Image (cartoon, rainbow, N blue to C red; front, side, top):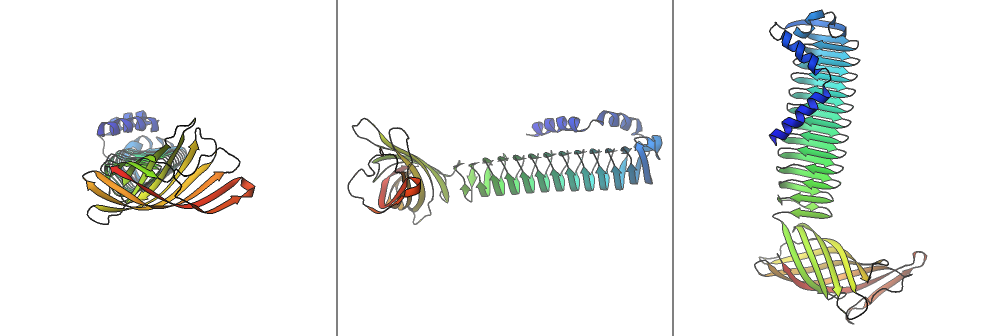
Length: 398
């Protein structure tokens, strides 16, 4: 991980510093000379200003540069229409139309139209139209139109239109339109349009449009897909994989289909269900169903758990031809009869929504016992609905 961070940092530094070669050459020529200080620098471009050839060995309290400025450092304020280059530290305000480059630490506010690039830490605020880059730790805020990057830790806030990257720990908040990456532990919140990733632990919340990935999570994950080795809170999403969490394979029956297979994954506080079912009959077609659900399973006793689940399945006769959706709310009991083996059973309330313009729907019940107690037609949408009480029972393997 450290090697990857160094490679990425080196590539970005070269890409973000068009005058890096010039500044390095000048720095070599000036490194043995004594650093002096002036209250004010006024320049047009580097070396064409009040400090002349001593620009690289002079720190300025105030520096005003028509196009671009170059100095050993800034103590209070620096402004340029295009760029500012400081060999060492810069504080407290640095403003540039295109980019700021600082070879040392930044303390205060640094704003650029395109990019800020620093070779040490920042304590304060960085704001750039495209990218903020630093090889040191960030204590404060980074705001960029595209990406924020640091190879070290972040303590504060990173907000980017596309990507945030912290090579080490994150304490605070990362918010990005596409992705957040933290190489170390996360204490706080990661929120991204697509993916949040850390190979380490999270103490807080990950929220992503597609994927959350972490090792140990003390908190919650909210996304379409979630992965964690372990989690203390609830992973909420379409599919959540918790390595040390709740995983079961179920074989069961209900009033509609005598054979059902289901897979549960997540934690007992919140899990996802994927299932298929079939009605074995000697006919020219197959009655089958597929569906998805969510549930929770609080403990009732040493070997007994309560199951509270909501699910939906599409019931078909042969191919999927028309809407025939069975929506179910189930409350049942789960009793562990042996290590990694449990029996379950319980009642359900069912709500069917189906297309009345299609006349090839399969029979609803396998047996004659269940009765529909409420039925309604929706005349303008070619839809109808039905209510009935049902049941579920079966065996689970952990």
